[in-house]
Amino acid sequence: MELEKRELSGREKDEASIKLLRKLGEQLYSSDASNRRRAAYKLSWMQEDGLDILKAVLFGDCPAHTKNAAAYGLRKMRGRMKKMALEVLEQGLKCRDASTREICRNALKMLGQKVPKEPRPKKPPVSHLRIREIPKKSEPRRRVVTRRTRR
Image (cartoon, rainbow, N blue to C red; front, side, top):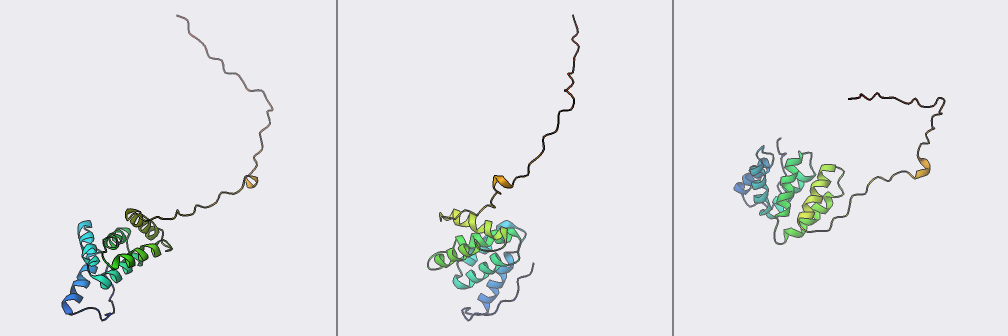
């Protein structure tokens, strides 16, 4: 999967950092789990630029293993970015995508945060259950006789 072109935010210093961000963003879509996690970890050190890329992957239309790597990168954020990363993970709990919600829930649990339980669908009250008829006993049940063999 190809990473879409990002608009430059003005925070990027030079062409080398732009290339590095693009390369790390593409590595998040790698088939190798080790490469995905390594790229997410490196993006966690890239301050706002890394946060933007990880957030886009987490909320984008990506496979679950790519979203897991992005959540890993958000968990590894340090310093002033830690609070922003936690906010992104909490936003993920409200996302419509079930895999994103589950990934964010697990990431917050790993960070030791309290995570509200997902509401379960309510069961209908007992009065709304279907009433089944009991079959009539027209004939008495036949008794099955088994033969015993004598020795």
